[in-house]
Length: 103
Image (cartoon, rainbow, N blue to C red; front, top):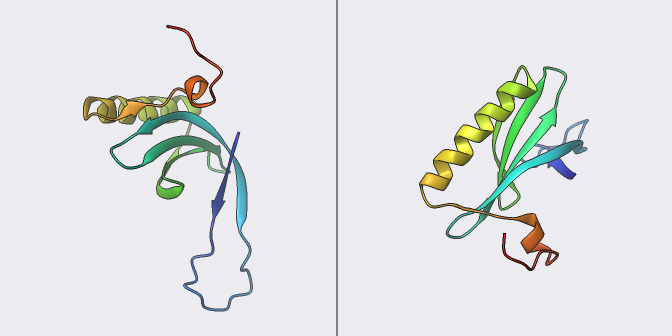
């Protein structure tokens, strides 16, 4: 599981709560672009679920969804669109060197 950190957005101003919020996230898919990798993560929230997109560990999108089914469908549409634009699927098995044979 991934751990996603949401940093303090105070812009360096002193605040009473300068801690980081840590949440558990599950990686749904990973894609490789021309220069960076994009991770799609699912996070459970008090509202329901959040879909998070991290580009090279930088949070670029956090989208709330009421159900896990809605989140997965939304993530699938994003993944399909990006693959159609030339992004490559990152296979964790080949990244870790555990898979060496043909598919």
